[in-house]
Length: 259
Image 1 (cartoon, rainbow, N blue to C red):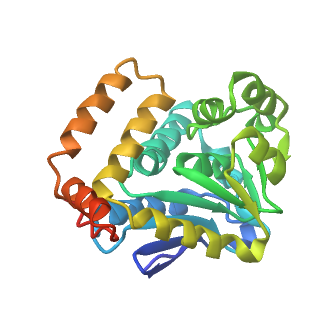
Image 2 (cartoon, one colour; image 1 turned 45 degrees about the vertical axis):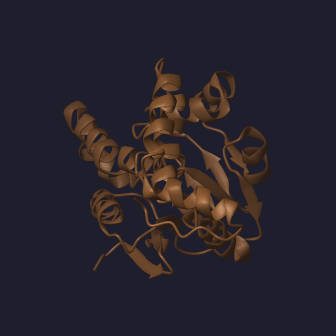
Image 3 (cartoon, one colour; image 1 turned 135 degrees about the horizontal axis):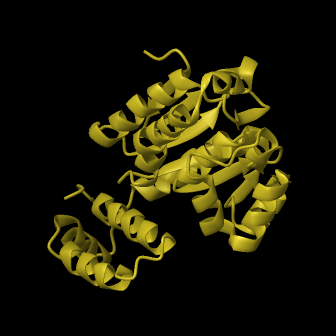
């Protein structure tokens, strides 16, 4: 179905693998277009309960953008490229009502770091490397890097990494809060799937609200607490909340239906 992506749906979890290993899975226009399509499918397909985004091969998640496409761009072209990526891929991932996590299996640089940060959280292999080296090209991040890196690791360290173009390894990324866990490469995808199986066993309506409210907190929404109160109340009217309470009192696993 796709030229630059591999997809596999198993037990409700869609694994999306960016498959340009000869280019270290660098993002080009076709990858962005195909990611936009697969993200729309995650939203719409009820059989998909959660998703993992990863890269092909043992070296790279996504080692940035395909720089060969930059030479033909002017200011308007650059803005259009960034806007399309943000609107159709990166922001769509961040706002997806279903869990989307990054399994970072190597270099996550530039647009690759931005793709990982757009996911709800990140798990990494021991050989993972994160960075926003756009200053080396006379540019700044264009797919949300200045905003999400600052949200995740704080202003001072984000400034340092973006102004130096330096990389951090997996253990440094974990200490900074850029990745949640670090695993041997061979364990990365099994651990990601195992964790998602735990998450998708919970009430989908509640997971959706957790994503929505946490995203508001990340941008400092001044009405976040009020929206939490509203969401808390709304969920009491759902079948899943009733089922959750009954299951707890009856000491049995809950059977959530997503309504």
